[in-house]
Each structure stands twice: as C-alpha cells, then as structure tokens.
Length: 305
View 1: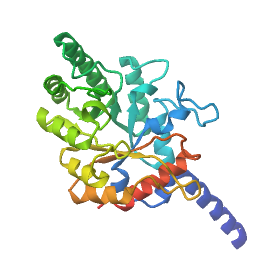
View 2 (view 1 turned 60 degrees about the vertical axis):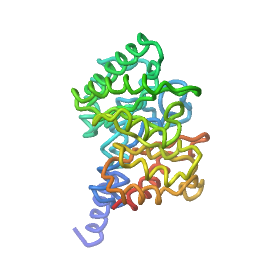
View 3 (view 1 turned 180 degrees about the vertical axis):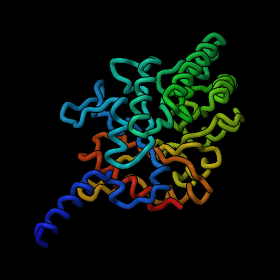
C-alpha cells in the first residue's frame, strides 16, 4: 500500500471511529462529570406519542427507546422519566419491566420518575389520605422495578390552604415504604404546598425522614427572594437537582433565562455531589433539542467541582 492509500484508509477508519463515539464524549467531558448528568424524558416530549407530540419531531421515542438514545447521543448513562409519557401501554408493572430491560441493555439507569397523577397528599379526609398513601406505595414499587433510586411527587398543584399535618403524615408513610425499598421520595418546587423554595425546605424538614428529600427545580423558581440564594439554601436537603432550562439563544444555543454556571457553582460550593437532571421545558422549545442539551450539559459540567 502506498503512502496516499494508507493515509486515505487511516482517515476512513478514524472517521468511522469518531462517528461511533457519542457526541458528548467527543467533547472530552470527564467520565466522572458525565456520571453526574441525567436527561429527563420531558425534554423530548415532542418526540413521544400523546398530547405533547409534534408530528415533525424526529426521532420518534418512547420510554423503552429513550435511554438508548440518550446514551448514544450524549454518552449520558442516567435518565429521568415523566409519568405523562408512558404511552398507550400505560405504567403497568409489565411495561415498567420492559422499560427496565431496555435501559439495562443500553447500560443506562432510570434514576427517578416524575409523578403527576396522584391523589392529593395533603387531603383533609382520612380516607383520601389513605388513598394517597396506597397510590404512592404502588408508584414506589414501580420505581423499584425500573431500578430507580428516587421518585418525585407533588403534594398538590393547586392554590389555597395547605393541610401541613396531613401532608407530613402521608409523606412519612410513603418515605417509610421508600426506606423498605431503598428509594428516596422527592418533593419539588411545583406549585401548591411547595411553590417556593422556603416552603419546600420547610416541608422536607417537617417530615424529617432520611428517605424524604428535595429536587429543587431551577426553572420553576418563583418570587419572593433571589433565585440563586434560594437554590443554594435548598442544597442541604437535596438529592437530585432538576436542572431545568428554558430559553436558548437561537444561534449559539447558550441558555439565556438565568445564570446556569452560577447555580452549579453555588451547588458545588455546598458539597453537593449528586445528579443534575437536565430538563428543557419551554414553549416554544429550542429548534434543535439535541444541540440545546449538549450546550446545557457542557455549561453544567464546566462548572462542576
């Protein structure tokens, strides 16, 4: 083989090898930092069947195929699933086993499920509270099947008076079940009883259970106060960060809604060593979701300790 043929062949091999490497790995993010990233399926809600579907969005995804897509595209080996995207098969135990098998085959862990469809946790009626506990336990059983280390619930999403004592009672029982399974119950600043970070922290502390933690949501922060001070104050009770992104520059794909680098540096300064779960949730969504995820992941990992 002459020198020209050798170089051509070597170039072809190198190109093929490069294509086989996930895009994020090409960006030389250290493995220890990639291991602290997750991607929420709600980021790709347009690619799923159902009410959020956008017909032109490709590729078509489901909870069975999403873990492999994230691993192939970004080299990220953790995902968070949203209960609103289970699709026609629903969230049966059988479907959870199928999703787990697909995730295991891809070398990906489902770290958590974000649960919306639950009885109100702070219900005044004892029978309604018992129903919430029962539903919560079934979800936690499904989390175990999926291989999760945690599962996120909402106390309520409405406004008005919050029954704190009722919420504490139900959450302690759910956390007791979580302890039996090795799964942490998570609360998020998602309206209602935990609409603000101070309220979220107060409820976690009131429950006072090692298997009840917070998942502070960067994008769902609401006044009063300061976004950065509030998020930093939550880290002492945090298990996972919901690293929600909103608006991206259409040319550079830099995130513009708030200072992500500052949020990461603040979290790291507290000694946080957990997972940042990337969730892009804005209307309209970025024109190129993959590119937005890559940019967001780079900003997060660049500012990790």
